[in-house]
Image (cartoon, rainbow, N blue to C red; front, side, top):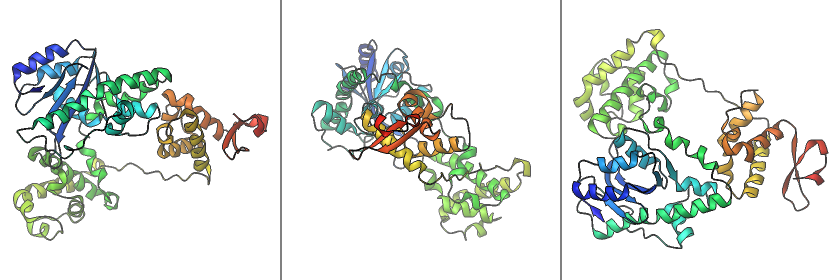
Length: 395
């Protein structure tokens, strides 16, 4: 059903509010805007499916109350962007959530599996991709567009139910608790601290200390303008001319005009504000100049990370889960570095949650010389306790 009035929204939400589980999806556009432009909200309790039109309905509170209900599990596929939108609308953390993409990875169906593939696997149904590039903010929406959007929650419900059964069969329900933590943490859906945005600019470390203060002020100005104009920051000014502005710190509009990549229209519109930002940076006291975090370059002893990665492959085969889900290269590198430098590993991701027993403790034993790896008679890698000193006792 397609919901375009406030009264209909109240009615459908009244029907949905008693459900302990809701499948939710959103359609949005964000190619050129700072914020997502929400075009459609789909929701289903397994029986009732509704496509809510946020362009026709200004007050979404009846639906948002459903989302805020902590007694209802909100099911998504690849939830992060949906949650970013809903977090902004609800102004609160969305709890509890279930992401079928993450759950699929945990049961061994593949890392970052698409919704089309997971539907095909569970239901044997192929999703038509006829509306992939639809502008969901244009009206009117056709009946086929609405049905296409409704399928995202209509099919999500049985996918969720199947995953719950597989998780229970594999005894991996508890594995998901830690995996969903980042989706239930408000700081992951709020705008990064503006004062730290300059750190993302390429070659920012080439600037002198005082010019770092300038780039910080310029980045703050650009971010504020992007929010006000509701456009991408790069559409106001790209990083390259922004960096050059900070490096040369022009004192007038004429000097500014000589910087490559800085458009005349932007100079005419914002020249005074840009110069003011530069001056604020130049006036920043030495003890207030921002400091870039120290980048520690670590090279593991030759062959160590490769050996660990090989063992991760062994365990992933045993657990029927992709190696990148068990322990990706970044986590392996950090684990080896912390061990080698005698740094605290207690809260390391590979020694937390389900990964601790599945892989972390074993990796620690290898690095600590308690567990060794050999090639068995069948040509496959095997692990065995060092104290036995015999590959024949391999696990």
